[in-house]
Image 1 (cartoon, chains in turn yellow, blue, purple):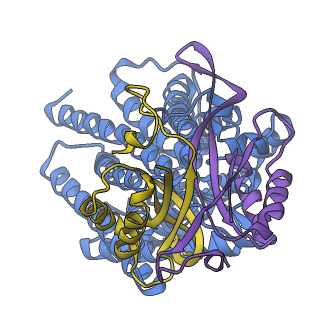
Image 2 (cartoon, chains in turn green, red, brown):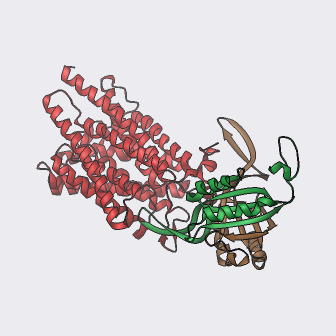
Image 3 (cartoon, helix red, strand yellow):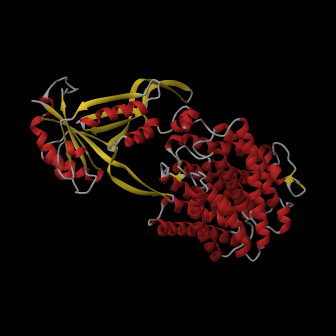
Length: 114
Length: 391
Length: 112
């Protein structure tokens, strides 16, 4: 079976919902880290009297590798739980993964993602 | 030594220990209000103020300040102070000198050469500050003779440091990226929590700074006096913070954390000159004035004068130090407005002139600023070999 | 659609960001990474000198439609380069699909 990498850039505030929703549909393995994202949303700040607005906003980046049979489920879960309807909800990007290895054993292939 | 003198000495010693701890406060405020890539350099500059202050003031500064007066202007200097019975006074005065020196480091943070700063700090400790102190605290100084009041040093310590900081910040120039097309850019401090801890430590130390300046604790009068000093100090700090809090709330729509912190310090600096000579109610009002003025001054200096002062040192210490000195002439029955004005101006002029000379010479000889590459990479790597936030 | 990943010097970031903005590329994510490469940096800690090729870099992740691929890469190569070893790399991958989370839409239009 082929494998896909699903990258999602979401609001930090939505993370625990997204994580739970992914768990509910059987997706429990992924990495995440904080990034700064430039997009359509702008945020106004004031520091010591200087007002400025920035499109650099803190987001969370999820990297989920799944077998093809989980691709749509994962995307649907993220779209459902990650959206607020406001500008700045984020994006999902899908890529093909050429190969996957389990480091502990050296095994290859879609079985390592079960 | 009789019992009352012994108790006075004990009070001075304890107060000196509290004022020493203000160095930790200054370090935290400066580190917190500036960028993480320069944190190590800020630590080193603050350490140098302690090192240079401790050594320089003992070696010669103390006698420049307290030696026999030459014309009411300067004390007769002698080297390596060794009057055993007086060492506790040297201790107390040393930590004051270190406070004056460290005010400048925040204003020039993030782009000033380490060697340049050490030299400037040394000159503050052995020349600029001691001479300033001599005019008022030695007993035969020319301002003492005029009836000038600066109980714990709004003018002598804070305004001198603050106006020197102004010259430093002006001559060193703003940090790269601070002004784009003439518009001030925000460069947020990397850890305002440190800044808050620093302010609280300074507030604590100030009880020693102002309380200890009574220089006595042997009678009921002293107890009453110190009690009033401490309440005035605390009230001014609280009111300064409150004023800055509400003023920023009104002006920007939300109470600003770093400005509120500066407000507390502004109140403290403002009351330092008159803490022993005004009523509690006056102290509260003076604190309120300082708290509002500091916010106005910070934004004026940053946005209109386009002088980059990352921590607000010029506004907190220079502007409020001068303000507090003059206000003694308004709020205290012992104070003469004209005399206070003369003294405040004398100290401002002294600091501005001497700082200009020293920074000018340093600029022409070893230079004031690090290179652009060093500034962008961060002074920690450039000047000290490694950063301070390692995994 | 293409994913363009660039690993650049932190000191070059604001130039790169501005240059990308000027050619119409306004949306991307970035985060700090430690990059091991050809550049080595010398450090001293408590008297011990050591050199490391673990160096702080910034990673940019820019997703663009194919018509923006060349201009994005050209801009990156032009502004992120200093000529010294350690300038970084640019990686290009194919993107199979893109979704806008707010609306659920997919495809190249979500990148406009």
